Every structure is written in structure tokens, then in C-alpha cells.
Length: 47
Image (tube, rainbow, N blue to C red; front, side, top):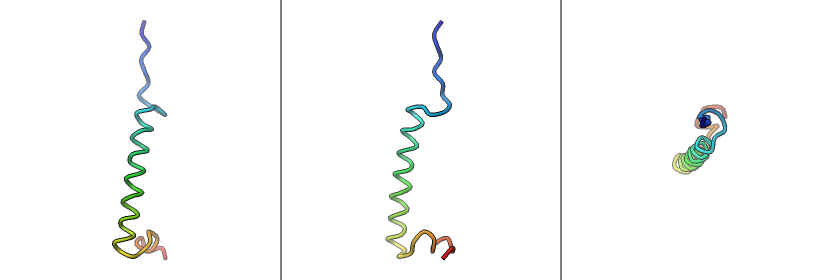
């Protein structure tokens, strides 16, 4: 009887995509700050 691999939780597939999307979000955040001249808190109206 073959064991089925879990598709939920901390799997290599999920962690790989989580890392990729985090890097993409970081780059977009830095680019937005550079283009607008405002930090993220200023953009959100918190400062």
C-alpha cells in the first residue's frame, strides 16, 4: 500500500512558492518607494 504525500502544510512546494512571492513583494515595495519618494507608512497614510 503506497503512502500518499500530504499537500497541506510545510511542504517543499509551498515553501518554494512562498519564498518566491515574498521576494517579489519585497522588490515591488522597494520599487514603489523609489518611484513615489515615500515610504510604505506614508503611502498608507499612517505617518
